[in-house]
Amino acid sequence: MIKKIAVCFACTLLAILLAAIYGALHNQITYSIAPEYFTVFKFDQFGFSDWGMQSPRLTTAWIGILATWWMGLFLGAFLSILGLIHSDYKTMFRFVMRSIYITFLVTILSGVLGYVVGWFDTETYKSCCFPYNIQDPFSGQYTQLWLCRCANRCSVGNSLSNNYEEKERIVLANPQKIKFKSVADFLKSLPASEWEIVELLRELILETVPDVQERLAYNVPFYYRNRRIAFIWPASVPWGNIKEGVALGFVGGNALLKTDVNADSKVARIVFKSVSEIDPEWVRQLLYVAILVDDQFKTDQK
Image (cartoon, rainbow, N blue to C red; front, side, top):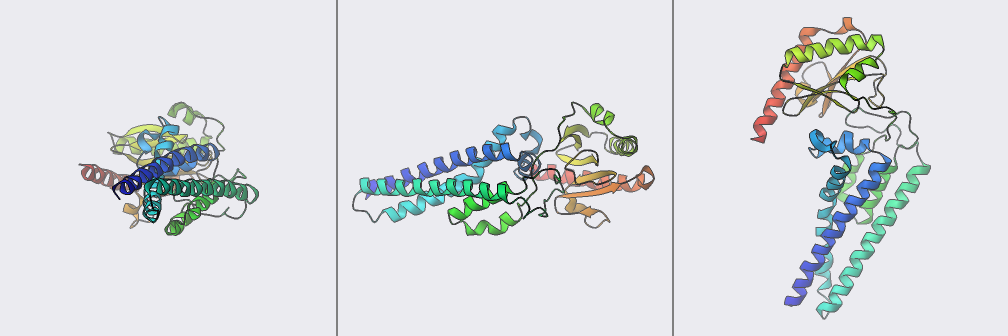
């Protein structure tokens, strides 16, 4: 019986290792299909936004490991316990590992099937939501990733993930053919109407939050203290879902829900179509709230 228990631990550890490797490799393929799924969404969801872009492939692999190792734990433990019915530990090990291999093979085949279905059906989820208000209207590859992930999880019987998967339907791809090297390069690319709005918003942010750091992310200026607090996104920069004007966005939009700002639980934003629409005092008040939210984040970290 002791040897059977040892087999249980060994098979569970091997299942965890296989699941982690699968998650890392799966995310590498997924990143090649739709990098913004990670750089815009998953990096922020896992708390890797501030340093993830320094090595996006490595960060993507680590997210895959974090997202899948626990499935290996449950799978290995469940199959190992079932394997105790065998008469000896060698037979038990052989059948448990065979079951684990079959499960991973079905998972891989389901992922491939999901990708194929998504490739030939790019219209079904065109209108699906994305929690950061970022969409790519130019790509024909809309749903391959979500279908692939859904098929993978269903293949191992993880029905509890269905509600979560509903929230992960997104429009994928990157229409930006250039990458700005600096904020100055970004400003030079703007049409005059947007440049005026951006410059005023930058001036308000830098004056109101003197210790803020301005850095480019996703080809637009983001503003950091303890973490991201705000961003400026003009309509001329794709996949911001801004049809006209310039958006001033705040990370942590739930703190601004009591104001008349277009906000959800993650991001709040206001779109200005001209300089005359900007009320400097109101913008400063929103920035003060953003500072308080950021200070609270620092307190929580301690």
